[in-house]
Length: 316
Image (cartoon, rainbow, N blue to C red; front, side, top):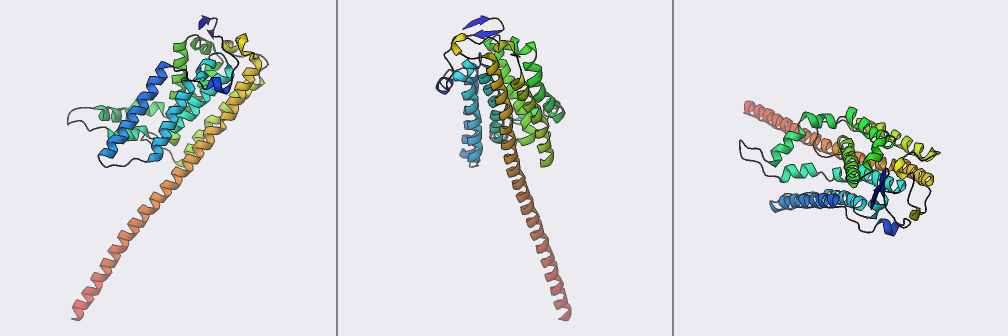
């Protein structure tokens, strides 16, 4: 692999699905994903050993989310993503719009709060530090819609259409930092909308849907801008290696099509999840109302029985 010009050049054969999915581990993401899976597994095992339950579907969603990160960063997709705009866009879409949704639906913060031991009085352990972070001003700011929506939009336009993208793509460290940023932006954007973990901002379901749709159109417009470009717009992908046998402009148009089409995927997933959450919330509220009505009915019956008993006593 050579460093030259704006990006990192490498000789790769023409892209195929088989080559894109072959194992090509990136150490940082490999270690991070394995650590995430191990910690989540430890939490589930700890809960079950003390007799508590943890929903199996949460585990499946979380593991699937982490595996999508591994698929994105530890296969040939990461190699081809350094030189092909279309493959890079697949990486971007998965790691910023699919992986965060699946990971958040796995409720890792809730699992941590339930499984981590409570520190002795006067001390602060991992659980207490996590609670402090959740209630901090920092988390309130970075999860507020007035912050998350502009950040979500700026991560597209201010990154791809400025020299910052070419600078980051000039080294593997910059590329990894950019992918970490994409994942983090997706997490803070979708957390207040779909997250089941506790957080400082939890709007009603209709407002959450509006928050979701506030960001998606800009994503679609970004894809359309790439599709309609008459010249290559990003210097990193302006001169693809000859071994790939691709045209830079056609590859850019394909990247735009991927960005445009993929914007529908999280919308559908989030809407389905929100509808299920909404239905579950209504069911829980109905059960609480029924229990309250039953208690009130019991009290009324007891009062009526007491009244009858007082009448019987006076008649006696």
